[in-house]
Image 1 (spheres, rainbow over the protein chains, first blue to last red):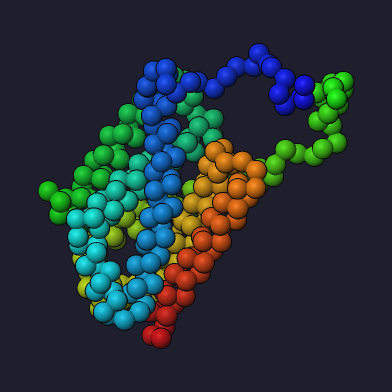
Image 2 (image 1 turned 120 degrees about the horizontal axis):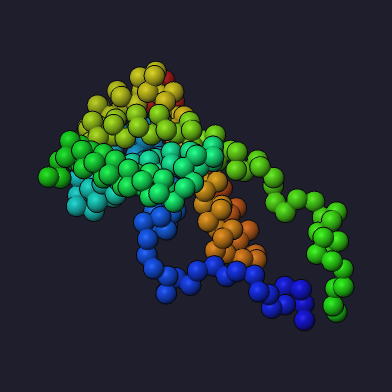
Length: 132
Length: 126
């Protein structure tokens, strides 16, 4: 039997199907998901600048898409992802510096991230996208 | 064939597992830079929502905005490709892992450079 296949009694990662959902793990997964969304969104925003450097007709087409239902969902989703990833990223930087590892601190900072990112998102949607 | 050496003996002399702290540090450094940049950019985006061609170009082409935009797009894409690399290292394997990571890095470089050229073109009136 090769070394890699040898059975071991090392701890396994949690089985997602039976694992109880909790704030800390949900926020951790959401950090990755919003990170992926923001990467795709960065390409979209780069495209916006590229269109602005082109003709006014091309830019008008791009803006028409931005104003559509799909475009507004994309922009609204980008704003939420940005605020969430920003707030939770700051939480991560505090952990990197060695602060906030106690379970009750992790929960408290987690709830602060949820509240701040939701309020910032709501404000940006109301002021910018006029969704409400 | 069974490898009878101890785990420590197997690991010795192979060098570090990956790239040391370089990747980790670059991710944190770009993260810190992005805190003020993303706040500025999100607020600007909200203010500019629905801006027409002339308004958008006037904004992009002003000197301070040009600098900040190039920073936020360049650093943002760099931070993004570093993060996606970690995700791909977690969930893909073998040759495809390399293909995906190379693809992500190339796309980030091309879009980043194209955006920077576009910003400079607007600013310098091309």
